[in-house]
Structures are given as C-alpha cells and as structure tokens.
Length: 252
Image 1 (cartoon, rainbow, N blue to C red):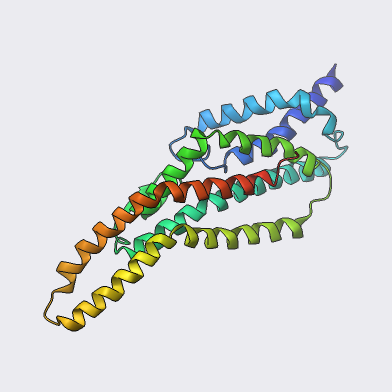
Image 2 (image 1 turned 90 degrees about the vertical axis):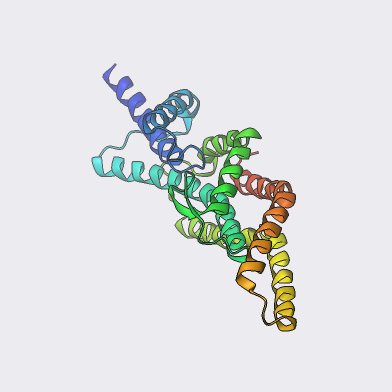
C-alpha cells in the first residue's frame, strides 16, 4: 500500500509540475485578473483528471533525490516552454498595437494592460484584450489545453530534452511574432505614411498653417476610423496564426 500511494503521488506531482507551470504562463489563464488560488485549483483539477490517462507514459520513481529533482525540473522546463510559445504568439498584438500607436501619434496614451500586467499604449492593451477574448470565445483555449496534454507524446517525461531545437523554435516564434505584428498593423502604417506625405505637401504650400493643431486631430480620427474598419480582419489573421502556432504541438 505504501508503494502504491508513493507511486500515485509521484505521478500526480510530476504531471502537476508541467501543467501547473504551463497554466501560469498560458494567455488568459495567467492574466493578473485571474485569482491565483483559482488558477492553482484549475491546474490541480486538470492534473487529477489526466493522472490516470498519463500514468502509463510516466517513468518509474527515481532511486535518488537528485534523479527526482532533475525529472521535476525537466517537466517544469517543458511547461514553461509551452506557455512561453503561446505568450510569444499573443505578443504579436502588442507589437501591432505599439506600431499603430506610433503612426497614429497616440504612443503617449498609456494604460495598464491586464493581459501582460504592465503599462502599455492604449491600442496595445485594446488589441491584446480583444485577442485573448476571441481565443476563449472561439474555444481556442481548448486547443492550448490539448497541446499541453499532447506534449506528453512529443516530450516524454524522463527523456533527454532537445534544448537546441526548443531554443531555435522560441527564436523563430519571436521573429515571426514581430513580423506578424507589423503585418497586422500594415493598414494603419500605410494610412499614416500617406497622411504624412499629404500633410508634408500641405505645409509646403501653406507654411503658416499650424500643423500641430490642425493635422494631429485629423490624424487621430482617421487612424481610429481605419482601425475600426480593419479590426475584424486583423483579429481573423491573428486567430489563424495562433491556431497554426499552437497546432504544431498537437499530436494529431
């Protein structure tokens, strides 16, 4: 009985090490407005449900404390890797919002972003909030949870970690996130560039025109109007890329 209980507790804690860390980093679940106790209870509940299913994929109880520590650290690292990749993809909205704020002269309009738990531009906070909301509305958060479950097929507990490949994947996602952010902001970048050219020609024709008092309000109104018209398309592209990024971790 003692050995049976020890093996079950070991398996449960090993599963919780990966799932708990992933839940603390996945977009939406890790937001500051989510109560930490509720997040912990949710991770414990998922670990309890998956423990019987994943029991056959877990290694045996290590004979030494050092072996147990290395095994748990490996699971923590895998959970952090999965959560970080998801956060990097969502960070594309932060990049898009920052670029839009710069080209629309609203970079100094700051707000506390509940998604990243830091002060960002108003448009960045708006885009990231809408993006995470749509992830849950479209049930793509189920895909994140499924990716964590399927990670036991891709990253077997106790096996050697491919640190180099994981680092390359994170670096590629960072690069793709910046590129995606610029692509999402491209309608407003083109509009802003066109407006700046027209405003520059107008100031050459009318040197006495107060550019700051005339051009800035028009620029803000035009950019907000363009953002309103293109928001649905921006979010559709983001959701598609988010699904592709998370779908790479699905077993089937």
